[in-house]
Every structure is written in C-alpha cells, then in structure tokens.
Image (spheres, rainbow, N blue to C red):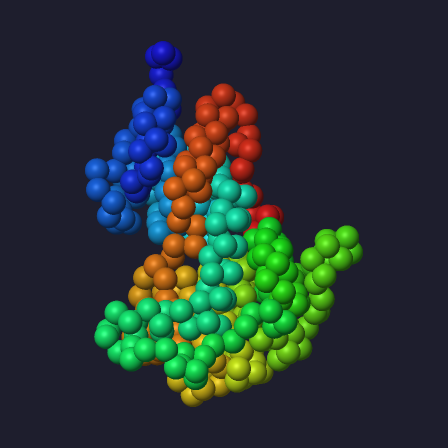
Length: 328
C-alpha cells in the first residue's frame, strides 16, 4: 500500500460497490447521508482534498473555486453534464475537471421513448384513473390515445443520445427529423433515415413529437421559448430528458393550459427540483424525478469512470474524460 494516497471527498452517496472500490484505492471521505452539501461544506471539502467528486446537483462557481486553496487539483464529477462547474475558472486555477460521458446514452434514450409512448397512449392518465377508482370498465371510445407509428419525431440535439433515440424511434415506425448545431455525416443520416433541418423553427412547426436532447449552454438556454412553442401543432407533444433550462418552463405551462400543444413529459426542470405547481396540476403532463439515467448498471459505470479518471490523474497522466472550456 502506498504511503501517501490521494485525499478524495465525495459529496453524495454513490453505489456501494463504487464507494468500496474508492476506499480501497484512495484516502476517501464518503458522505454519511444522501443530502446535498451546502456551498460552505463544498468549499471546505475543496480546501482539504486533492480531489473532489461532486454530482450535477452541486453548483461550483468561480467564487467557490476562489476559496478552494492550493491543494485541490482535480474535480472528478460524477455525471456527464458539467454546466454546474465553472470550468474556465477551474482551468485558470490549475484545477482539472473530468466527467463521465458515454455511459448513460442507452438509459436516457430508453426513457425518452418511454415518455413518448406514455404521452401518446395516455399511460399515466390511465394509471391515475384506476388507482383513484374512476375506471368504470372498457368502452370503445374510452382513453383513446394515438399511435406513434408514422408520426414525425423532431430531435433537438443529434449527439449520442439523440441518435440513440432516433434508432429506437425508427423501430417503432416513427419518421426522424432533427436539428443540430452541425449536420450529421450522410452515412449516419441514411442509416437513421433522418431529415435534417437547419431551421429549428421550420422543424418544430412540422413535427408531431419534439424530443429535447441537447446540452444546456448559453446558446441553448430557453431555445424552446414562447415564440417557438406557438409554432408547434396543437396535436404535438414535447419530451425533455436533457436539461430543464433548454425549455422556458413558464411558457410551456401557458401553452399547455391554453391547449396550444397536446402534452409534455419532463424528466428535468428549469429550476432543479422546483416544479411549477400549475404545470404539475395538468392531466396531460408526465413529470419524473430526473430518473432518465437511473439504472443500477449506469450508476456503477459512472462510478467506474470517476475512479479511472482519478487513478489516471494519480499516475501522472491526463484523465481520459478531462473537460476543457473549448469543449463546451
């Protein structure tokens, strides 16, 4: 056993197998309960650790990094997104940042498809009806939904997850349309039978389902705003398994309540776990507690990536999943 091991602080409870492996490799400080750390607790953790392992619920801004001191050398984030970390300031202070990409693609894509089908077939409404004792038996016109086969699916953000959603949607007979910062290679377009739209406005006005699969950046904040929601067909629905800030949630609530669109399914919200109560009251809405990537397999793989990033750094090499400002 080495005489001096890296000091690692973990901000939230992780799967037991991940915590155990960290304990074997590092001088690790684990969280006793699963409550988020306060800003002060995170700053104090950064002051006493070589490595901080935060999650997407831990905001680490420039002011906090300015108080970190000289010991902290790596922020090995447990999660794919890094918009909760001021990566630029971290870099200026000589602190590396890493994340855990590529392990949640299938889990998130599965959830997007589940939400699409759930909306179009009114699954949650049906569950509530039975559980609340309001079901009087089968009827020819009872709880009519819509087929997904033949519907136009518009994918906003055609990265790994967007493409995984497209592959699944094709199996259900949906027609794939997409808007992306850059057009995909022709071979990928042909394999997905996907139609590219340079204009998001033009795509949104034509699709039956809009799936949000792009990251949150300054350029995508409120990309789906009140003006664009008015372009959607009144029979269309919107699904978001990406980042809540991409959609103007207040505008979405107004559009749903006015019947300007037919439904929405959200796994993420603009203000974290704070859900607009006017949105939650609507029957044509599915709201989930950010569980799109919540599989045991996925969470363990995330932890394994964190460990690899820390161990590689400890060995004097660049973490394989290092994030730099130019990537954002």
